[in-house]
Length: 174
Image (cartoon, rainbow, N blue to C red; front, top):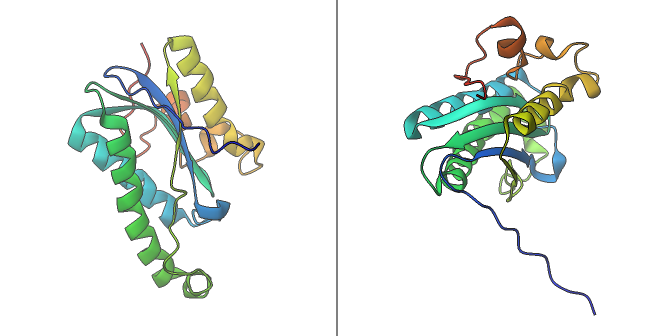
């Protein structure tokens, strides 16, 4: 007998670091355009500043997003992700309609930009944070988008390797 979907548990206690991933709806490459990736970065930075969240690193790929985040207050992760996705979704839809009208017209306007859920992995040690940062920073290299992680303008590798600003305040793990 087939069972229903397994209920995911998210442990969102204050002070815990979270490696989060979420994808574009149907894994569409809605973030191919630099402007769309910039929108996601803008709302990441704005949202973290508004609720005193910390970003240890991020990468925006053409069809998904990774970030390592931490919030001092319990219960902030889901709220933050919901707002980040909602605000960026509104702006991305408008951006695509304005900049890529043929592409936007081929997509049902009632379909979302993002998949409904997100993946969360609690990170309890600085070595695991480092592992997750290396994984996500090398994602554009593995996908053939750049030859070195710090060349990808839509992630935090340039902050770590070159101390270059990346549009989001980055706090290195301690």
